[in-house]
Amino acid sequence: MKPGPIGVFDSGYGGLTVLKEMAAVLPQFDYLYLGDNARAPYGTKTYDTVYEYTLQCVKWFFNQGCSLVILACNTASAKALRTIQQNDLPLIDKNKRVLGVIRPTSEIIGHYSRTKHVGVLGTTGTVQSGSYVIEISKFFPDVKVTQQACPEWVSLVEENKYNTPEADVYVKKHIDNILSEDSSIDTLLLACTHYPLLMDKIRQYTPESTNIISQGKIVAESLKEYLERHPLMDDACSKTGQKNFFTTGNTKDFNSHATIFFGSEIRSEKLVL
Ligand code: DGL
Image (cartoon, rainbow, N blue to C red; front, side, top):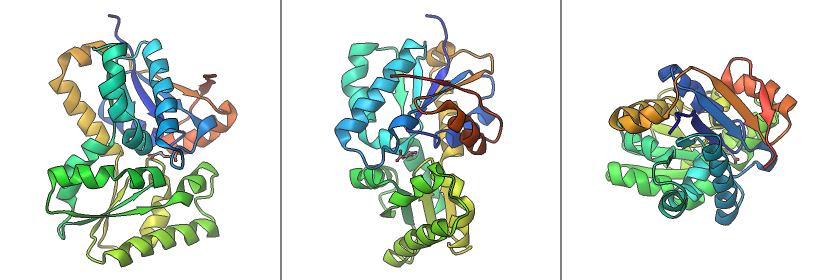
């Protein structure tokens, strides 16, 4: 089988915060990014819809020659990953793999907390799935997890409103809510790949002593370990250091916006699904 790029998927721009860290940790690999901007946000959609859209995108990656696809989207990881892994992959191709972001994050998050009280900030879909509560309890049974859905935060980011009075209102609101629900929280997990873009505001309304953890580096380090443990998969991933970007939305918008997420210039191509 000819080696192909590592596929990186998100409902929109958020996965770029993960890809950026992957490319820093594993610069030799090729990456193919797809943002399903035309159908974002996923955070408010049903299980069936998130599953249907995610599977469609995963199949596209496989058709592009990817053997490994990372769902760099918590909502897709929460609502579609397990079904794809258990039901779809055995039928599509037993040698291909799809991995998510919830497990690698859950494996490590407890180590950041001294009080053993962790707050999880995510989309409505991720919070409703309870995935973080379940996964974190497997690795850190003594950690108390409090969740908070922040439905406005993705739009603040998608609409470029990081530094508006609206951002102050909604960031403060959700930070205050979660910290008043459990005042012993010393670690807040940004369990949505869009949220790191609001980091300055989140920091502003969070006590200085509280850890604020974004997932990019965690997922990148976990991918590195995964490839070391799976040499056949490593061989199936091409290594010429290239990155290609596709969006189902408007390429001009994607390019200008994605550059902020990624930190360097991006030229995307349009994908019609
Ligand atoms: N970036 C996605 C996540 O990590 C969610 C954004 C959306 O609602 O589409 O959950």
